Amino acid sequence: MTAVRQWAWLTVTHLQQLLLPALLHPGSPLRHDASMMLLVPANPLQPRRPDDHFAPEAHAARAAGIDVAAIDHDALTREEPHRAIAAVPADDAAVYHWWMLCSDQYAAFDDAIAARGVTLRTSGDDYRRAHELPSWNHQLAPVTPTST
Image (cartoon, rainbow, N blue to C red):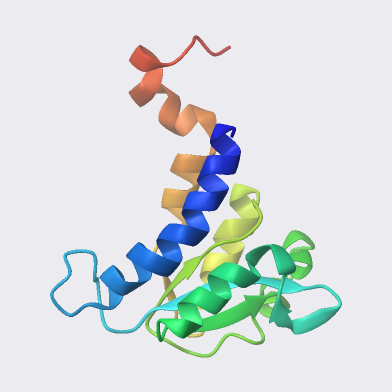
């Protein structure tokens, strides 16, 4: 089994069996606050449903009592973040799990969703720092191959 396949398996398994219960348990050090929402891409043909690739995580989150909202990923990539989040209710905090975005698209998404009263656990600035090589390469240079 490749590392990627192992990670995909671990993602669903840990979400269902370990991570979600730990996040919900009142005494857990992983629990940040009582209110959290999972954001996943919508199915392009059935926009109220999660994309099939993310359906297991959405199901596990709902089973653990976490709200789930579907995001129109295509609208985000067309730079229409307010349209993309039309189905997202106002809430306190959200975690996104979806297809990769450019840093500028994510920043626009972060701004649009903040206007709804939702705080993403990963801010636009944090996303840019983690997503773009120049932002993190210097910190990992001692343990990674040389980049040009």
